[in-house]
Image (tube, rainbow, N blue to C red):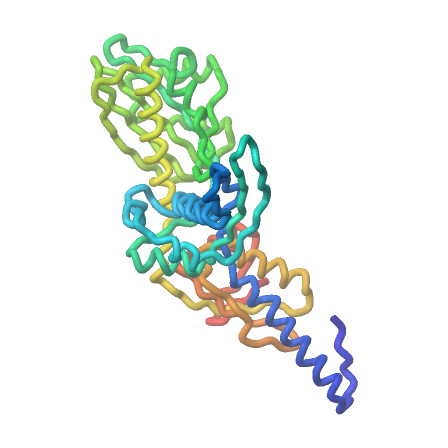
Length: 358
């Protein structure tokens, strides 16, 4: 929008100037109403005499809320919010849309998209003493290896039910996308070569082929009927180890295989959530200025801020001919914020209290 800069003491121009300022601020404040959008929630109900469409949609709200919570909260903390009331859920909904509805064989089907207010969700979880996590989806290389300790043999691809069935039951709220290795005789021989030190082996010779920063190596030690499972979870350069024991295991029993896979997936999801946990009690104010010359760069900067879940809020508190001045309320440390911005290819001068986007 171009504003006439000639000095005219005319109410119309005063109004236009006021309007331009309002639009400028509105364009930044509306992105602060960031939400969590849960899409493709499907609900059905028999079409009978007492059919009530509103009750069906309420079921959709409830389902959408628990799907959101499954994205944000560990399995242990989900137990704390099982008894939430429908009115509490509705109070955190910003908007919803009916994507599709149909009747088939006297059954009503509806598909919803539900947008939750992020601040209200975080506030609710904070009151329950629950720290949520950033819903970051990520690819992990997943290598499950069955090790028969009696025969001193191992299986990766052939006759490995964990490998075969791992990606059979995928959930929309799972944050980890598992990439299974392709059958490679060279990899198999390399692992067999390191059999005696397999618990200490870092698998880097194999994982580097897939160009992924994250990996999970799952060693399944079989001795008699029990299984000890050692998980090596690598997130960039950070490595976490975990041991689990399963009793009376038959690795040819599909039901037992499913139980093991389900339990391991829950553990891996919880581990990833703990890595990405948000401490909403930390509210660190950051003051940053950016050149006001390039409007597209300002828009891109605001879009970047909007994409960072640890940003509680941001707003413009001043602007002049050279710069736009932002205050950002961040749920974390300044160094963590700089890491996020560095990943987004931003260079920030932090020499002074007021940081500058270069």
